[in-house]
Image (cartoon, rainbow, N blue to C red; front, side, top):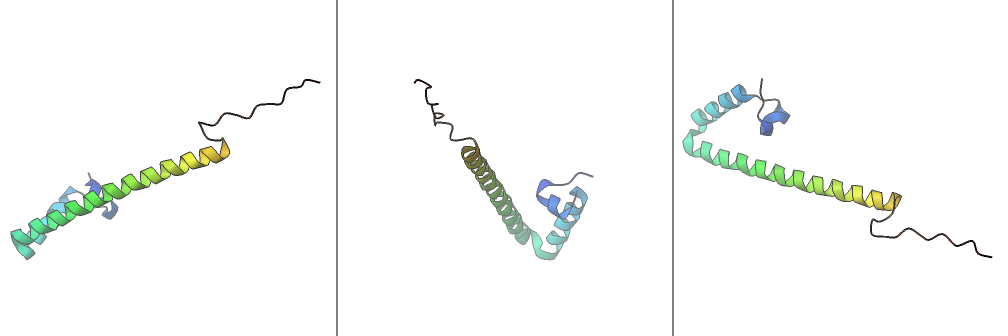
Amino acid sequence: MSTIPALAFLNLGVPEAIIIALVVLLLFGPKAARSMGKIGRTFLDLKKDVDGVKSGVKKQIARQVKDVVIGPADEKPPEKPSEKS
């Protein structure tokens, strides 16, 4: 069974989503169904934005950890003292 990505967390597939949409249409009418669709799209956009922020934060944390463990990429390694006597 294929699932709709936006409804994957509810473990709903396409047939279940169609049944829910039909019930909403019967109970609330076409105007309410359209506005609920707009709300659903808004939540999808919000989820995409949140995922983008999470991805950016994870990348920044990885860079910071790398800089602490290895050293900044733009920093030259310390020079070894010469052994002249």
